[in-house]
Length: 409
Image (tube, rainbow, N blue to C red):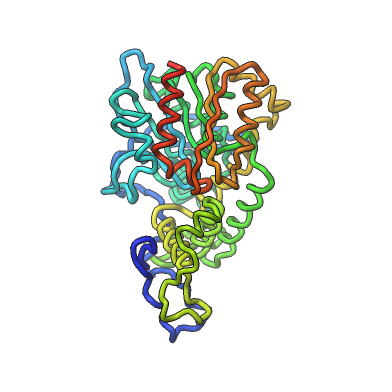
């Protein structure tokens, strides 16, 4: 399957029955998770709970938690230039750099992180940590359970954003960072940013939650549920215990469809119209049931791309963590929760065309900080890429971050 942004997919074999016309590539791995023995790339690792269980908010425990992270730049002697970048649902610690050995894709925020950008390794010590429950080196469902030595699979417990942040604290302690100059991230990353400020206000100098919310909305939870259902209904999901299957026998279709559902609401109707219109993949073949419009080819391509670098169980775990996000949970109210960041400067940023995390949700963050007498700046980036605009509008996003850092320093 070719990238529809650079070429046209080949015409499906018309001799196949209609029910099989969307079969995936035969060489897809059972999981795209990083596993021991794979190239390490720029990853570093630390066990954060030596000799004691890591207790989770939902009541479960993990006997051993390893966190994978990457760094750029040099920590100053005063340890006052550290920036934590928190990644979104299908992101990982590779926020900056090229694709290569150990990294299947380039840095997901090249253009915001890098020389001359807002987050410049010449000025800052930049850290990005693969979240707890992820699949690119940190402990997650594809990791070996120390008791059975087999992947956790369906036995992996539910984690929350607060669990992710507590695990990140272990990495900060390991690196000798008592306070981050800035904690920043978008979408699920923005949820982590908010929890950093509420849980550890003395350990953050400034916060920048982008394209996120104080709590997951019913709209967002509904989209997430549709994607999770598509994934678990794949017969190859096997209840989450699919890791011993042969090459090509993983829950590829379910994960790819879940990705397609997400890819639609991550973008905007306008961006799809501009990019694809009603163009077809093969103008000579348009009347078959599975002959594709270019937008379908695009969705299939990105579905397979995710399968090659992500894990289906991690998708479920992290997606559920996003649904559970609510800063007011067990804290009385939003006002009581946000009051803990009264002394921390905050920047919110919205994408004008984002209908998944609309501008109003970042306005709620702004108003909540203002209501407790805190300092908050709100930016809206005019961009047609929908929710993904915080990843694609790198020049505008970098400019606003740079201005914010200049103001708070």
